[in-house]
Image 1: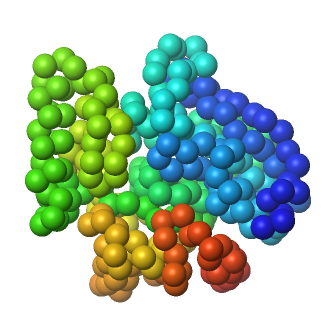
Image 2 (image 1 turned 30 degrees about the vertical axis):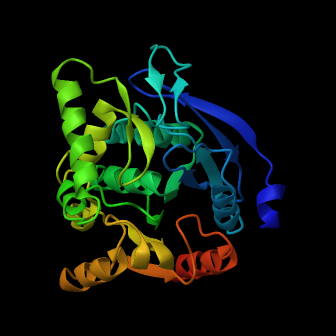
Image 3 (image 1 turned 180 degrees about the horizontal axis):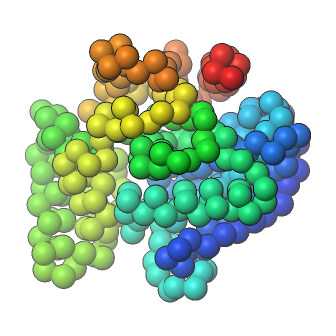
Length: 290
């Protein structure tokens, strides 16, 4: 998208209440409304063409944009804030997202902007949903979640092909945490091959249903669009498989009319080659949800 190349703005930073510095990029718009756009696992605010295009899509409507990092940016990093600590996807905990989103909301208020929308991808979308479910006083009115994974321990253990591998990684993580080695980094294989500390793996995947967004849907009052690629919901791992069908059923059964779900034909988790269809769908929803 050409608009993603044309946006002019400034590098910014803020600090969380627990001393973590978060960096981002601010693009002023025609109004005081502001969208927050954030990344998924191993990502950052400047390296994703998907997020840049997302930012351009909402900026075209007149809104300002905060394209930002969470403390889980990149695989591993070291905090530049007041409290020394290791950060990155290897060491983040999902519950810390509440602190990060609070910091960015406070930043938007400090610049006399109203945080009106959130757009996020993958794990970032899961964390944004978690924050919205826990932040009833948020000014956010609309939320676009691109491919959020279900972090459900029982769901992953139900996978007949991969549950043995997953169980072994869970067992190892629990053993390391119980023996004071929670920061030891291990190679995990399912649901996403990665290098994570034992504590992080246990927090993300061994917390039962704490981080399964199916348990929070009723607490998210914002107009919300849940988007998935066709290949991930038809042929992906267990924590994506049929998410669209299950969500649609929940929305109907619970009269959750503030939520909608869309599947982008031919799309994978990164929406390669089908971005035009993705942004057309998002833009149409934004117009309908005003």
